[in-house]
Image 1: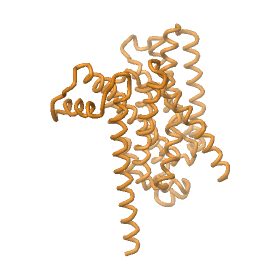
Image 2: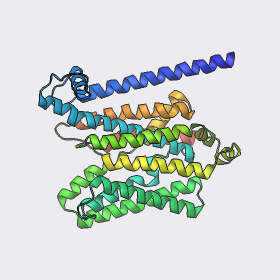
Image 3: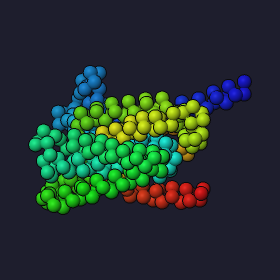
Image 4: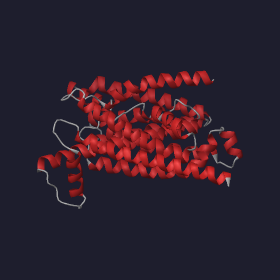
Length: 346
């Protein structure tokens, strides 16, 4: 009876936390869409959304409806998807690699995406048939394939995966810099660098839909491995004794998170520190059990990046600050704090 009561209490607490997170996310989306040069209310947002979903008629002018539905709403929702996805990837990687400083870019995925984008934009690889997003996605996959090859050659352990990621990151960063310095003109350089720092400007419903679909698939796979991720907290040897297929599980989850990161980077550019900071904040709320940790981390990441993007596009209006710059300004102090805590525990 006591155990059942404790379990029931945890379930109620988890449901309340989940409900509060979803409510905060919906409120954040509704309010963030209203912020900008054009004066729009939450009621206007609901009117436009309801009309486009077939639940009523819009009372807004075509211009105001277009601002909400075609400009601000897809951008805000993509910010939520990117924040949730990067945070989930960071959580999974920190558990698999047993490294509190691991994040989605430790595998060099971001650097590979940057190189792919630069090859398409600056050198015209693909003869105009490839878009920037397609080039970025292909580059991210190439980078991750190189990391898998290097880590397998070096033994496949967690520390070898991290070291291989660092090597791939440096390689593709150097390639990107070389191409930009030798072949890009001033306008191309400015555009590429802005994208590399992370930007959600100009995104549409297609980008949002693709990234959302990949996020849902990734969440389902990761939640299906929640108990396995809990076992990794005791080390890969302990996980193996508990019946976990360590190598297979690590490859499946690392490939899944790498694909999600590649999709997000191809649409929004390189947005750092979200996958590093948010998992630690979520663990402080829910504990280390991944069945509760993963959804809460996703919600926290979504809300966080919505407001970071809102700040980035309004703080210096009409000029826009790259999202990655704002996340770095917030993330670097948090990174230092994590380093300090890790050193103290050690």
